[in-house]
Structures are given as structure tokens and as C-alpha cells.
Length: 529
Image 1 (cartoon, rainbow, N blue to C red):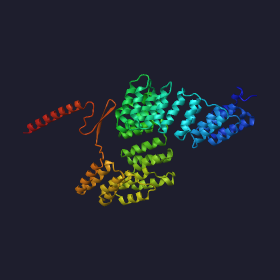
Image 2 (image 1 turned 135 degrees about the vertical axis):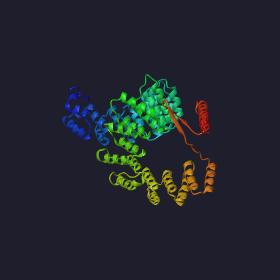
Image 3 (image 1 turned 90 degrees about the vertical axis):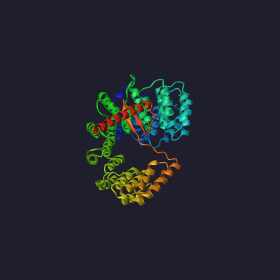
Image 4 (image 1 turned 30 degrees about the vertical axis):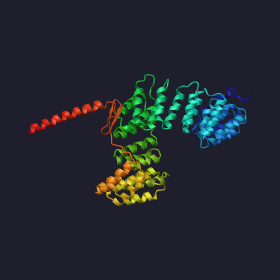
């Protein structure tokens, strides 16, 4: 009968069920039926079973190993499925061992083997070996194979090697360019990525998305928005979902409200409904821009909400001073929403940042472990210390810090110092302040907070000492700044700032306005006289 599956057999009901299979329980039932009728010996059915176990989100690599080990002559398709499965598992090194087994049986890899094999590498040394195999079997011209290698080299921090691989390619497409750009961004080399982006012979929505995402990951938010504004003028490229999410994050970070609103209008015009990721990004954007009612409207309209959506809304209410609403939404989440996670509890603890809600904060911190089996992270302890310090419960905050299972960071000590300053605990505040200055000697805010406490008690000599210490340590201070959004571009200014490209025109206009104000002021004085 042969090892290939006849066309008539491929239409049998349980093989159609195999294509629609959604769970391992269903797959095991189908597998049992295939064994009974004897069709499991055909490579087609066996490969389909194996692919589900190894590649499906509902799959099971242990079961995949069982099916694979019972296969007398696995095909290249079977090996590829297993290697890809291992690359997504907790034991990716098994993929390399399986590749060695495949070669020992005389099977040659194909273009689908190497992208999966590259992802199984746990170190750059293994990746060099995979690269050698790619060269040996002649896949240097395959853009998808090489893009995967570029991605992995950059992931291991070997960005120069990734660039060399890129330069050695005889033909490059937008996938290769985008892979290298993402690699530079991942390694913090945003300027280099931007230069590469400008050199691209062609760009698509994915390449724009990669560059914008790189800007956002490296906190170059204005550059991300500027690039998006350029994209809007490109007729041949339409923004994809991930790009819109990234730009909304940038708008939220710098308060580019008008640009964010434009994106919201674009989403309404081009998408039938608020999808999960986009809806959550809009909630985050509106909440951080202080438009909590708009964020709440988005939340109410979303048909599907996951734990991230609920957490974003709770945190949004908290940072906008809607403490009670945030706590109520958390109670609703416990009743009808998804199970809260660690990020959810950061949001709900932030909602307790009022002296009347200290007891509620303690209750929620207890529920994390008792009800949801979530161990508090340093961020949760930080929220709790801040709550206690602001409420004047300085002793309780100090006890909590000492009981933490991890070393407190500068943010936690800073919260305690701020509480000491607010409530007049000078002695403890001085000890904490000196500890902070030792812990973070280049953080200007720590010096300023301690100096303010000294100044409030009239200890000006100590203030002078701190300023001298900052000068000796060459601590950089970051001045306050303001911004204005014009045509989607956020323009930022500090005191006596002349770095703006239109600074001469700005100062000319300011001088003119000052003159007119002085004239009006003098006129009002003369009228009174």
C-alpha cells in the first residue's frame, strides 16, 4: 500500500477532526482511533499528530516525543516540527541534539529547519555552529534563514557579527533590513538603527513598526512620533496594529494628546471593533493624558478584556486620583473579570495612596499571597512603603522595609525619606538620606530631597555641604521642562533654552510680547494717576 496516504483516506471523518482539533484530549481520542483502524502508520497522519503536539499552544511536547520515538522513519517535516517545538519549550537544547540525530540518519535540512534551529541556541557559540551548517548546505541566499540568524546574533549582543552576516548577503529584502534594525534597537544603538532605516531601498509597515518600536523601547518618544507623522504621508504604507500600539505608548509618555486622538480616529475609521491590544493602548494613553473619562469609555466599549486591560484601567484611575473607583473596579474584576496578576496589584495598591485607605492596602497585600498565590515583588513593597510614609506611619514603613525578603532599592528609601520630610521625622530622615546618597551617588533627586529637609529645619550649613558634595561628585541635575504640541510634534523647552531650531524667532516674539505687556501695564498706571 505504500507509506503515503491515499486521497480517499485523507477525507475520512477523524482525519478531518484532526484538522479541527483544539485540545490534547481531543487529539488523544483521534490518535486512538487512528491506531485502531491502522492509519497511524501513514506518514501524513503521523506528521499531523506530531505537528499538533509540538507546535500548537494546546500541545504537549512530552506526548510529541512519544509519537516521534514510535516513528521508525521520521521525515524532515517531523524533525522540523520537533525542533520548532523544542525552540518554544523550556528545553531548547534538545533541538540541537535532535538536529544531530537527523544528520546521523542521512537527512538533509531544508529552509524551514534553520530558523527553528537558530532559536534553540542557548549561547552565541551554538549559533556560530548553526551558521556554519547554513553555509555548508547553501542557504546563505535564503533571506528568511539569514534574517533568523541576524536576529539571534543581535539577541546575544553580537550586533557586529549580525551586521557582517547582513553585509555578506548577495540579495537582501525588507525582512533582512528590518531584522538588523530591530537588532540595533534591541542593543540600545538607536542612532545606528535610524541610519540603517534611512538607507533602506524599500520600507513596509513592518519596517516602520520595528523602527518606531525601537524608539519607544529606548525612550526616544518624540522621534517615534515624528517618524509616524512621516508615515502618514506615505501612500503605499498603511499603519498596522503593532505600529499604532507603539505610537500610542509614545504619545502617552510625552503627552502628545492631539496625535493620540488622531490615531483613535484612524482606528475608528479602519477597524470594525476595538481589538484587545489597541483598546488597552488607548486606555493607557487617555489615562496618562489625564482624560480618565475617555479611558473609561474605551474600557466600557471593549467586548474582550484581558488581565492587562483591567490592570491598565485600574492603574489609570489610581494615577488620576480616582481611588475609590479604582478599588471598585478591582472588586468587579474579582467577581466577573480575569484572575488578577502581579501588575494588577501594583495598580490597586496605587489606588490606596491615601491616608484613609491604609487598612485596605494591608488587606490587599495579604490577599495577594493567600488568595492568588502571588509573592509580592519589590514594586508592591514600594507601593506599601509609600502609602505608609505619606500617611505618617513612618515606624510601620521602617518595619516593613526591614522585613522585606529582598534588599530595598533607592525608590523605597526615597519614599521613606519623603515621608520623614513631610511629617518632621528629621533624625530618621537624615539617616535615610545619607544612606540614599551612598546608594545612588549620581541621583540628583536624592540630594535635593535631603537638602529640602535640612532647609525646612534651618540647617543651611548642611545644605551647603550637600551642594558642595554634588559639585565634587559631578552630579548632573535635570532641570524642569515644559512642552507644547504643534501638528503632532512635541516641542520641549527648559530654562534659557536656545537649542530649538526656531529659538531666535521664539525669543523675538517673547520680547515683543513683553514690550506690549509693559506698555499696557504703564498705560494702566497712568490711568490710575
